[in-house]
Length: 445
Image 1: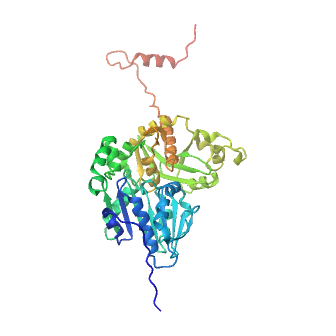
Image 2: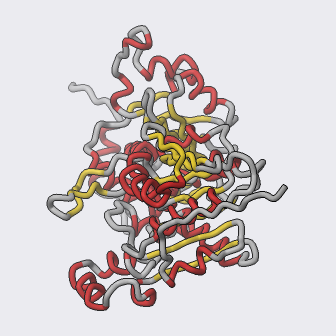
Image 3: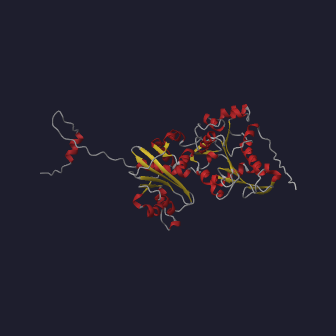
């Protein structure tokens, strides 16, 4: 009995620039493209083609954007359009398409990466990977590909030397296993020459180089600490814990939200940032257990000013009171309540003195790199207020560190004993004479 071969037609004509991408054979791929190159459409069709040609049973594929809402607004309509009659079922609430051969394509947001835990995928596309929290790939997405030997494409436009840049370096280093393609506006021939000239005239040089020439060297647009973190690159190394010195912590605390904590030691005029962690939705007991299990010799735990607030959920106890039960009340200290802008200036001041552990602080370092101003779409300009995303809590905790370190008392020099000598060798000043005078009590006769 012969098996009837069924052909599925996708109404798509690949641009010449993307033909090598569609023809790749490597399991892993990195796609660096300038704006308006057609990357999203190519990615959607690439997944559809892989899903329709899947020879196994019930193929599972995923398209992941930094935010689920972003995946829905940018890619969902493309998937529905290009799937056409090959779609057996379309689930709007789940953002899932089931194809006629049983394969499924789902859209996710990296902001809720836990929704992918426990799933298995035959292929995944990560859109604007530079905006992802670094732990999402290693902790969540990579394990979903193991048992099914799934493939993955990392796509996006540069945003400084972040995780996307590091993936690019891996791809360039291992070309047998990684496909790499970079499309610059000046070379791709995808945009009219007149449009490129107009863009150059309307954008800053850094904006143009980042968005249209795929430069990872350009300053990250709107970043608060872009210059400082670029200069800190040589100080992101293996930083050892010195058990002769206390470890201080600086916090940003939230319930049902991210809690972030930095661990640091003060060595002379240097700040050695030796560790970092961030958790979401954990209670105070579990958070304190993480701290205690690290086995550091602790000094002070610096908390934000709102840690004094009483909470009904904790039987009227403030956060500082709850933490004191585990970490000790004498080790707690509240950071002065400065404005966000003052805190940002404090961070800029101390960053040249900071040394970061490249492994333990990886996620926190990336948050500091990407911590940026919110963009006002109406005014077409960056606001002074920070954008609220996954970077906010690590950056807020680092502000606590900067303000706390600035507040640490400077040790006073020991008192200087000056001998009062009569003659040419006398070195005493008038202040010394008065100080010596005040040492003794004199009574009236």
